[in-house]
Length: 321
Ligand SMILES: O=C(O)CCC(=O)C(=O)O
Image (cartoon, rainbow, N blue to C red; front, side):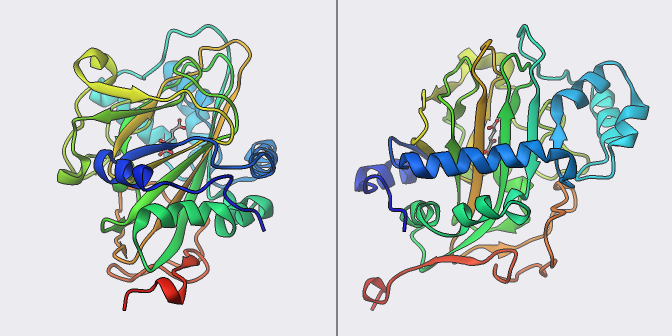
């Protein structure tokens, strides 16, 4: 069985609890990273088969050209794209595009674990659940879901600053997101950016449309300030990461990424979500549709079943007396 390349330290757990995010350097071995990379490439090669696969750059190009026919023909997935772009235009909020030369694409898929067997194995067993367990302080850990985010060289699209919690159909405190880059990532190529000084736990923020600050239609919560256009006014931190490094953030922490300005370096990352004991299901009608799920739980239900399996349990000797 694959093991962590090194143990997670108490300092790292302390940092996560204090800051809402932490960098774990060199925590995955080469074999795990290679398995992730291969299974993500498989997902991207079959993106057209995914009910939730998007070439986000094609969407933004269609939005710029006001090509509502193209958007309409791609509106049977997670989002009503034509309606969403009409909504963005009505808000007059601009698309968040970096001044990047090149024609790279931002590729996005949700629910990869439900359709790519190797990716599912990585999410459900081995070291990833163990990493989540180290930060959740829970008796058991459930897998909640995944996305993959690929930014090819020369990608203009940013991922707007946001808080994951209001995209997720859950409530509670014990949820963390494990971001696994399989390429070196820097500010230039779109590493994760975290915002210090906005306490996501104190306030729910409206989910946005990812390529714009416009919120998802019908979204609840406060409006997040325009961080992208006022970067100097915020305490935004980032880490240059290498394959083998992992970033973990609390699902209420504010974060985003830039485009990929590099000419040659692709930036592929998997985002895996895990929950602890206090999390309960709570449908958010405005949240993106989770088309891969087999069952719709009721509000207030604990997570479980085939969609949200238990992936880690505290060993009996460790259980609280
Ligand atoms: O990789 C990205 O561009 C964004 C990732 C993200 O927002 C997440 O993992 O929650």
